[in-house]
View (tube, rainbow, N blue to C red):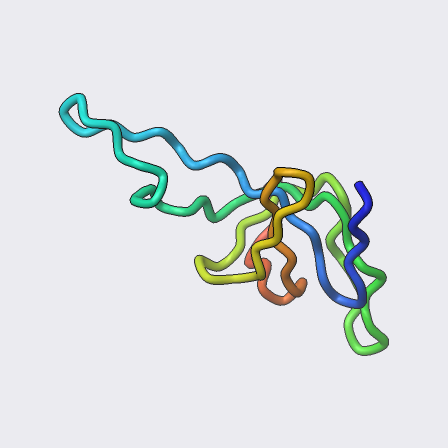
Amino acid sequence: MNIQPLADRVLIKPAPAEEKTVGGIIIPDTAKEKPLQGEVLAAGKGTKDEEMVLKAGDQVLYGKYAGTEVEFEGEKYLIMRQSDVLAILG
């Protein structure tokens, strides 16, 4: 991975959206609900006011509109501040 977040930001790979069908009709990607969990791939070093508690490999929950979506080598990722992460899944 060639993306290294700075300060209190983390790089997250969102979990894939679940395929939903309604009465045999497949719901298109645009109508699927965005996943609210993913895996931390990389984390910054934190700031002098806030230490980084997240690390690569953590499974996390985040807010529905959290982060900035970026595309790198055909894959979609989210970059967000550590404070936008709601919980670490254990």
